[in-house]
Length: 289
Image (cartoon, rainbow, N blue to C red; front, side, top):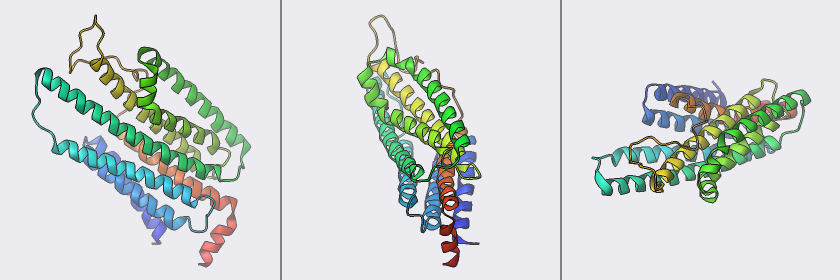
């Protein structure tokens, strides 16, 4: 078995194990297998993209950044499990919980910034590909516009309930990451490979980015409503509040893991396939080596 094929197979198996762990409510195992999947995918891209100067480094850096984000999430989860202890009730306990809640939001903002940079690098790789299919390009552009309209209508409610500058400051990286991912989806059809790996991966990547925005917006809006209660409202920690992400469809952790891993994976492999199809001389040169 050749090395690229072995790395790709290891990436697929690790991704399936990550989804299975999430389905069995094993978040630690899901994060670990997800990190292994991205590292194996990174190795595949490094080996398989030799001679593809046009897209090589953009895809390598993009997948590398996503692997760094996965490593940070795994470290934070292990730290959270290690710090788990007894709850403190009363005003002191509420203040401590809000501080911890805010720390988790800041971490998710950092992860969203890493996701944004990773998606930008993948977008650069897609842009470097030559445009080819017009019909496929029109189809993915229309799909991206429909997805953008749904996303805009879903987030419109939140902008009227909370301070605009604070909301944008909190969810800005996740919002930009979602918009860039939708832009990649619009471009993917124009530069798609014959197997449609790039458009399918771009669609899953856009959904994963929108889901990440939904989680961050829900966490921040819940924290803000508890921290800044209205004079005529009675709020208590542990009581469900209305958040800015209520209009987003709720999916299971297994579905989230599948979208977050399959999206970048299919985009990376699709970019490499499209680059080979656009320049057959690259494949011939690799075979001679």
